[in-house]
Amino acid sequence: MKPFVIDEATIAQVHQSMKYDTLTCRKLVEEYLSRIKAYDQQGPKLNSVICINPKALEEADALDQKFIANGLSGPLHGIPVLLKDNVDTCDLPTTGGSLSLEGFTPDDDAFITRKFRESGALILAKTNLHEFAIWGETISSILGQTLNPYDQTRTPGGSSGGTGASIAANFGMVGIGTDTINSIRSPASANNLVGIRPTIGLVSRDGIIPYSFTQDTAGPICRTVEDAVRVLDVIAGYDPADDETAWSIGRKPTSYVASLKEDGLKEKRMGVLESFFGIDAIHLETNKAVRNSIEAMANQGAEIVSINEKIDSDYLVSEISVHLHDLKDHLNVYLGALPNHASVHSVEEVLVSGKYHPGIEENLKKAMALSTGTPEYHKRLVERGKLQTQVMKLIADDQLDALVYPHQKQLVCKVGGSQNERNGVLGSVTGFPSICVQAGFSTPSKTAPLGVPIGMEILGRPFSEATLIEIAYGFEQVSHLRKPPLSASPLSGQARPGSD
Image (cartoon, rainbow, N blue to C red; front, side):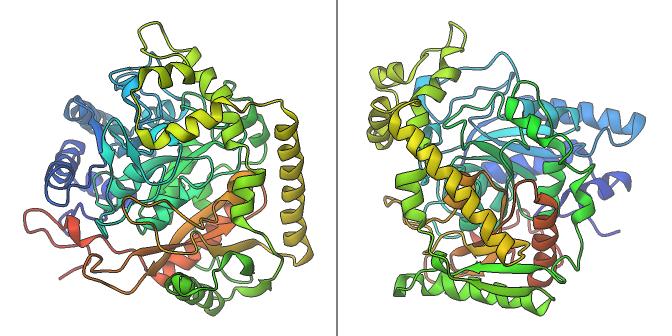
C-alpha cells in the first residue's frame, strides 16, 4: 500500500490507512496542525482559523486507543473537523467572529457538534466567518479578513469563508458552514470545493448562532462530493430542539452514501436557468466554465432543458428574503439565553459595546429598525410562498430532476469589495436543497496562478438530496475539476496524491 499523503486525502483513504496500520489519528492531527502553522499566519497568511482545539492531540490519542481496542468507533472515526465559529462547542469558545463574544464558551454543544463527536470525529479548530454571518466577504472583528488561497487579493466568499479557505488549503478533512443566503455555497464556489445546503428541516440549527430561523441551515463544505455526503449522513435527522426537523421524518434515507453513483447523470433532466447567467464582459469567464460543465453533463447522459423564465436573484435578496427582518429578533433569542458570564445578551448590547467590525454596523442598525410580525414581513413571506410554488412548477412542467446555474455570475470579489450577483438566494429563500460543485477556473493570472475558482449550483425539490447527490457525484467523476491551491503546497517534500 502506498504511504499516506495528507494533501487532498479523503475519509475513505484515512480509514483504509488506519486499518492497514499506516496512519494514526495523532499523526493525522499533527500533519494538519503543521499545515495550519505553516500557512494560516505564515506564508500566504490565509487568516482562516480563529482557534485550535488545545486538546486535539490528547483526543487523537484517545481515539487511537479506541481503534486498537475495537476498530473504527463510528463513520467519522478520527476525522478532524473544522467548525465555523458560530457553531457551539462546550470546550472551545464560540464567538460568531465578534469581539463582543470573545472568550465565551457555551455550556453545551450544538446538535451537529454532538453528532460529530458521537460519530468518532475530532473537532480540530473553529474557523473565521463574516461577523455574525452577516455578509459574504469573511471579515470579523475577532480575526480580520480571511484570504482566498487561490488568489490572496480576493476574498474566500462567505460568510463561511474561513471554513472554505481552510478546507481548500488542507487544514482539516471536512468542514461545516452555515447558510442564510449564500454562505455554504459561496465559499465552495470561491475555493474549488463542494458545499451542500440541505433542505430546511433536514439538519438541526440548535446551538448555532442564528441569523434567520426562516432561512438558516448548516451543511458540509468538503473537497469531494463523497466526503460531503458522509458528513451529511452524520449531521442530518430529527432533533426535538429544532421543531423544523420534524419535516425530515420519513424523508431521509438510511444513508445518502447509496446515492454515490458513477452513472448518476444518466437520464437526468437538467433545467438550465438562463436568467442566472450574466450577459456582460465581466460574466464571460463564469459563463464559459459553467456552460462547459453543463456540456459535460450532457455527454454523460443528462438531458439539458433551457429554462427562460425570468428570476432576478438581486430582487430576491432585496425584496423577498427576510434575513434582515429576522436578524434582531432571532439573534436575540440566542444572545438572550446566554449565561450571565457572557458579555452581551442582545443585538442592542453588541452595538453599545462597540466590539464589532465597522463593516456590519449598517446592517445591525438597519436590523434594529426591522422586526418579524410587521406587514412588510408578512408580505415577504407571502412572496416567498409564491416563489416556492413558481420553482416547483418549473420543475414539474418540464419534468426536471434539478435546476442548474452558476453560483455567482461573476468571479468572487477582491478584498475590500462586496460580493455581487450571487445566485444562492434561490435555495435560501425557498428553503430548497442545493449542491455547489466545482465548475473550473478563470484564466490564470499573476495573482491567481491556477485561475479563480468557479462554482455551479444544482437545486432540486425539498428533500431531494439523494437525487442531487447522484447528479453531483456523477458529474464529479467525469470532470475532475478539484485542484489544491499552489499557495499551500505539500510540506516536507511530500508529493500530491496521485503524483509520481
